[in-house]
Length: 416
Length: 170
Ligand SMILES: Cc1cc2nc3c(=O)[nH]c(=O)nc-3n(C[C@H](O)[C@H](O)[C@H](O)COP(=O)(O)O)c2cc1C
Ligand code: SF4
Ligand code: FES
Image (tube, rainbow over all chains, first blue to last red; front, top):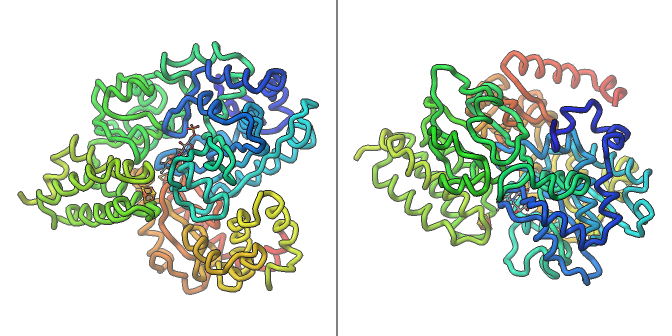
């Protein structure tokens, strides 16, 4: 049984009547019967952490919102553009009401005036579907004024981006939503503070999957949620598996399940029987790559255990590569992504990603030297930590970690 | 035609203007409407969007230029975005894209001779388990191979050859 991908267990789950029949909006009703502060305490106690990549404790984030401010917002991060990530899309396609219910609970907890769902531009059909859901909920007094007679008013809107990975970064997302260039803001002030959020008002930005967990927490209680997963990584998680496995796709498992269980029992093992697994990017293009050793395979997929093997679980976009894959080519692919997606606001990221891309191309063409390999590693090291947003760090990772773990893949292309 | 005063767009434009705290926030949805009307984000469209929002046209133009889904030049009737990012490439997307360009006889960003197609490669589209894949005018087309793609191209060409029937079916 799924908690997030319930659309797989129950037919027509994306219809409101079906959703309501299966405990739909029970979580919201429980929340409305509590004070906003009590709702935040339940979410804090559940141990839920952000599923957008950084793993920040969700209840703590909500508690940063100054309650006395008259205008506050919730912004749902549905930009889902990290290479290898396709979980928020399935939640919104197959279980849209659960996302909206979670968003409304968050909105009530911080007493927000409105929820804006920021969708990547390519989610055109999802936007239409969510708009229809919102109108259906308005008919039932679940969106709009005086929700279910509680005295609380809240609007829900969708907004389509237009093809820019950087708009998934929360402050760039807010700029984009306000009609400015989608570039990150200098912080502080942070989005949760007056002056830092949407229209300068205090704002919670949460990922789709994060919010889709909230109805379960408010319905079944913090303890039920905490009982799933590990000590520091509570709850279920959707793992997006792509690349060289037999059955790529989304799999919902508890946090703390092992990579081995995911890749062999669920994803069917190596795509080609005669080729061994070589490497894994567990958090899309932006997290450190690791060799797919037995030790890594037996590692639980949690924030704390992935740190021990030198990587992150992030948004759990798990890209698998077998022994036929040249890691220099992988570094090139991922670097091209970041060179294309750098918003250009800061020099180390803009120039660095451009230059790294050119030099890796040269190495791949057989025109590079061993010095070039050393130089791109140095440039990447220097780029990390010097930029306005984390994209600069993300872009350093593919270079640093492919060279560290797979030096021979680079050496084969260059003369000494 | 124009988008200002066009009954086709009036309700949608008003919906977007009502949705946000500031007029400026409606710039992205309005640019999509301009693109729908003119086939690309042309200077007339930019001017109209600027006029509706009380913005300077250069501001609107810079927003349009920042995002890849607004086209700043004319394109084919069917705008194909093929994903060649890492997970799709592990499943043969680079080869698929090279083949498709050859099949259509166009280079990246070009328009096919009949005005039907523009192809571009794009980064991850959140469909990595269904490669090779593309979006056609922002709608998903997944689990492709050469045979399926040839059949689709034929279908689209046929649809375009019967404009009256296609319009009636809308
Ligand atoms: C370059 C960049 C891209 C990001 N893209 C996304 C994204 O597509 N979706 C997302 O939810 N978070 C993304 N994030 C993380 C957000 O900034 C933010 O941390 C997140 O939405 C917070 O929600 P959570 O606490 O529920 O995870 C991105 C961050 C960076 C630096
Ligand atoms: S690090 Fe890169 S993406 Fe982030 S603000 Fe600077 S230039 Fe833009
Ligand atoms: S890599 Fe092609 S859809 Fe994700």
